[in-house]
Length: 92
Image (tube, rainbow, N blue to C red):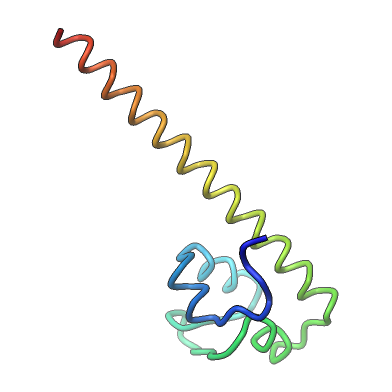
């Protein structure tokens, strides 16, 4: 797990921009969403009334989303590499 509940909202959104939308959908507005929240993910969740179990689930889900994003980026990079290789072969 890369994202932990003691990570600050600022660091989370800076390191993982997709997290801004993820948090917004969960009802946790953050830095750029119009209701700035500072502090940790856990603090923000507790301010919104989430239980410890719900917070743990949010962390699991956001890490799954992170993994999905990594997989998508890897696939996009692979497709880009294949296009470049195909283009080179056509020129040769």
